[in-house]
Image 1 (cartoon, helix red, strand yellow):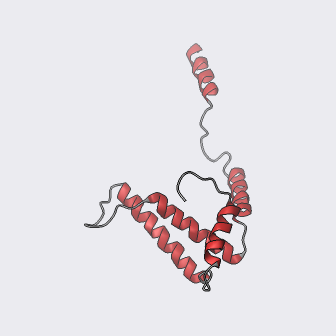
Image 2 (tube, rainbow, N blue to C red; image 1 turned 135 degrees about the vertical axis):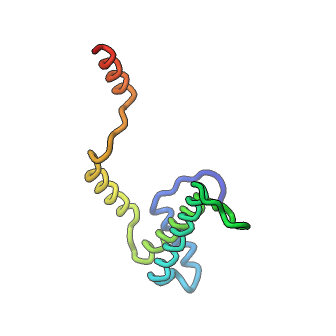
Image 3 (tube, rainbow, N blue to C red; image 1 turned 30 degrees about the horizontal axis):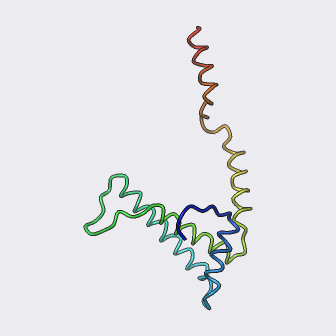
Amino acid sequence: MLGRMSLTFQEASARVDAFISQFEEGYFPPLLMLARLTEETGEIARVIAHQNGKTPKAGEDAGDLEMELADLLFVTICMANERGLDLERGFERMMAKIERRDATRWTKKDAPQEAADRAAEEGAL
């Protein structure tokens, strides 16, 4: 399927499950999926290294970060499906944790009006 599409976590999960469920073997065992997750993470690292200075070996493709991240997402969805986990609920819980924990950890960007007001204030001093 080409073109832009927007999927919810449930839709992505159902699409992966529909694909995997057509095969007798079903989902890989958990440790094999963990190995696949590790493999995909290594491929992401390779692409990022190539994009940030490390030159590919002769004959080696520089890679496609978008596809490698999608591969990682596919394996993650497989792991969640095999365990009956709800990634959308997990994502919401994780974001709530980060938003609470890191609310004051970083320097927030100023809204354009706040920056203009501060600049005007500093100019008046």
